[in-house]
Image 1 (cartoon, one colour):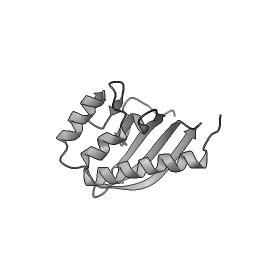
Image 2 (cartoon, one colour; image 1 turned 120 degrees about the horizontal axis):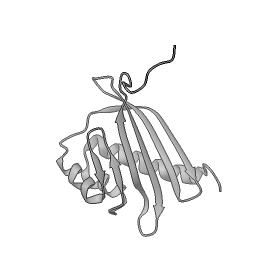
Image 3 (cartoon, rainbow, N blue to C red; image 1 turned 90 degrees about the vertical axis):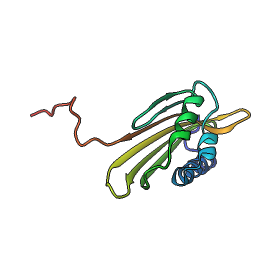
Length: 134
């Protein structure tokens, strides 16, 4: 299996960039179009747990706007020609909060590249479930 084929990385980056522009503009139609229209699609957000495209669409319809953010780091890894992961580390403008976003994408027949699973989180100051050695 080929890892990080430059053509595949470019295709996935185009979807990633389209999604990021849609987040900034709260373009619900584009955000929805980036996701696989299937009940098996999953999106875990900062405040929501969504199973299925209908739940994701309902959430998107309820959002007035998204907090502006600055990309700090983007990492994309492609596995073969039809599967990829994108990772974004970002900073929320005005608050300094650090966010992380992972998207699992697949090239699907009749759909092209789509997000099949996404996870968004904010970096906590400290994990109360973990204690340090020493």
